Image (cartoon, rainbow, N blue to C red; front, top):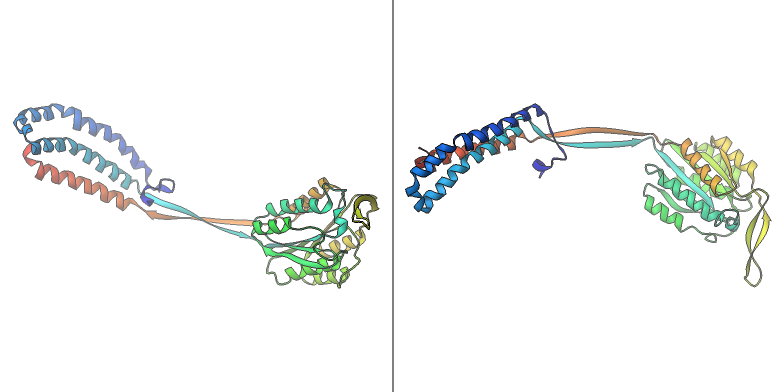
Length: 337
């Protein structure tokens, strides 16, 4: 099928296509200029028309110019040198590995974001993932402890499904910022990527976990991992869902407490930045800013491979000419003479 794959066929010598202008001249010469000759031939052989074999030969004689025209077409195409070209692309990027470390503690259910902090965080994280198809991205969740929800991967569908499955209550409650950072560092520790990044999001103050944030910070610095930190929560107070002893849930205004000094220290000492998000729009803007700051450098190398196809067209053209010659001077010789 490659001989008819015209989407990928190119011609090295397309100037020979001007020879197609000779075909109408040949048609005129074959069927109109020699019309009287064919007419007289039919009249002089009227006695033979009574025989099926002679009738077939006369019709075949009239078809001979068609063979010659087809032969000319194939030979012109062969002279134009058809080639099957395929483009091979090699995509190389500078190699960014990114871990999203997301706080899923109970306070992330506060509704100063719509519908709440954790759902807003999942939305912007999903958008961020979709915008970076060439990077390896992983997901860590933490509250009172930490857990790798998804290791580094380029499979966006798998990663997005894991983001979708995040909910508060999957882990023991609390805010273990140090554990969230340390687990993210562990996922990047053996990475061969040129650039290693953690995006750590929390809405509280470190109050649990086996590793304190400063220790986790020192480990991140040792492995040259850049950390972007995000504090999530409105200024002042925010509506939190609170359950009473009977299991009834009500919304209560609670003070928003984010250890911004710690977040700034972590980002500053690792070469990242600290951002504060107070609503859905500002959180979306934060992720877009990080996306701009950490652009993946993509290099695309493309080259074409050519396969010569002219031989097949030349062979068909010469075969048609040979067939026309054989029919004219052997099988149809008695009529043509």
